[in-house]
Image (cartoon, rainbow, N blue to C red; front, side, top):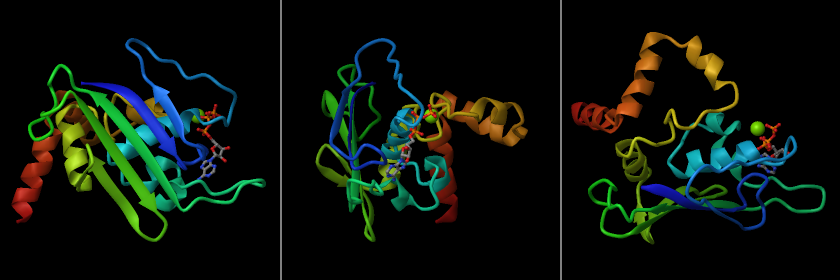
Length: 183
Ligand code: ATP
Ligand code: MG
């Protein structure tokens, strides 16, 4: 599985619909301070099910919606769509019946978030599990925030273990066991 496209609409500074094709190989995003590079990485995390506003540098989840500028009014919703190339058919069970997966998350003011996979309504948990099993995911070590390396060096052993578990692709199993124990 491979990220092949990222579309944003009303997400943070990306107020106008933005369509990024992610080609094979290494992709670099360059631009002046404040142009939205970190916002792009946050959009990736968010569409994969991130639910901590702090990871989005906000106080509440609705802070990801374009908040307005001197010349433009605020928006009422934000949407991010991530396309996965699944031509290798390595998507986890339940999601592996097509060559491409479109994961869409939309948040509307006062109405919260909704997720879709290929036009089908799904729960946040389904999307989180899809990525946890694929060893990417909102908490994946593949996504390194600004300042995160120094945090890692100073992290407690338990926190470091969670990172290794995500890399090993077993964090989805732990989540399921935890939920089974609660039932
Ligand atoms: P740097 O090079 O300094 O790391 P960057 O390219 O990573 O910069 P970002 O942090 O992604 O930049 O973008 C910051 C910009 O996004 C700021 O101008 C901020 O006002 C804008 N922004 C963040 N949230 C929103 C929002 N909800 N609505 C409108 N603009 C927003
Ligand atoms: Mg940045």
